[in-house]
Image 1 (cartoon, rainbow, N blue to C red):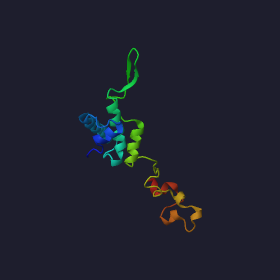
Image 2 (tube, helix red, strand yellow; image 1 turned 135 degrees about the vertical axis):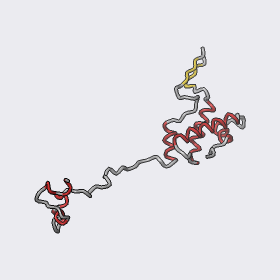
Image 3 (cartoon, rainbow, N blue to C red; image 1 turned 90 degrees about the vertical axis):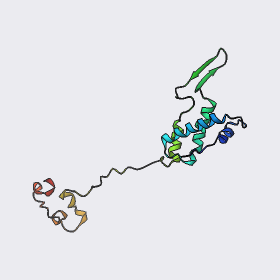
Image 4 (cartoon, rainbow, N blue to C red; image 1 turned 30 degrees about the vertical axis):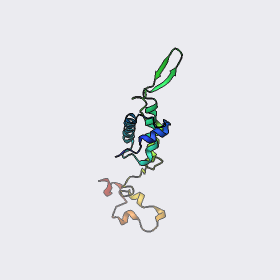
Length: 151
């Protein structure tokens, strides 16, 4: 799958006025795209915003610095992994939604064979009316141990 983001888009987003390091930008965009493809495959075209977000974070903060103090110099690095290349929870959720995998869903807990092997007393329900349904199936309802289901 081809990448959905170009270096000129990253240049515009970061407002670098054409002074972007093209090789570095291409590498970061490719790595960001690969990170997205771990969550959803194939990466949808609409996911360009997520790829740009990851690539921009990596371009502007390659070392993954989380805090910096100027006066007698102090730098703190986060535990996010390879520099600024990581997916946030919101980016992961956005990717899933853009790929059509997000949102609410329903699980049907009813077994496939529900209602097929009912006991005779469950088949002989007064509000159904008509004949005794257990008897119409050839079951002897007088002796519960003589019912075909028990054997």
